[in-house]
Length: 192
Image (cartoon, rainbow, N blue to C red):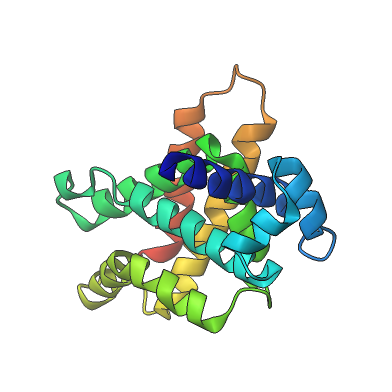
C-alpha cells in the first residue's frame, strides 16, 4: 500500500515538473497535472493542498537532489581549485543528465511562487558551497566579490554550458566543453 502512495505522489511530482517546465506555473492547471499523472484531481490535492504547495515541494526536492549531486566525490579533492572544479563538473553533468530538473531550477529560482521559507530551507543544503566560496575569498584564491555574486555567476554559467552541450551534435567533446567552461569561470574569479 505504501508503495502505491509513493508512486502516486511521484507521478504527480513528475507530471508537475514536466508541465511547469513546458508551460510555466500560470499556464499549468491542477487538472492538467492530474491528467498527466494519471490520478484524480482529489488525489493531487490529498498530497498537495494547493498548487503553490506542489511547486514548493517540487522545488525543494529538485534543489535537494542537485545539492547532493554537486558534492559527489568532493571529499577526494584537496585543493580549492580542484574542489571548485569537482562541484562544477558535478553540476554540469547533473544538468545534462536531469535536463527537465535543471530547466525547472533555472526557471523558478527567482519565482514569486517559491516561498521564502522554501528558499531558506533549500539554502541549508548549500552550506558547502557558501563555505567553499568564503574559504576562497579568505585565502585569497578568488577576488573580493560578494559570495552571492560568485555563486550566481557559477550557476548561470553552468546553465550556458549545459545549453551549449545539449545543442551540439554528439561529435563535440563534452569533457572539453565542461573544462573550457570551468576555465572561463576560474579566470574570472581568480586574482591575476
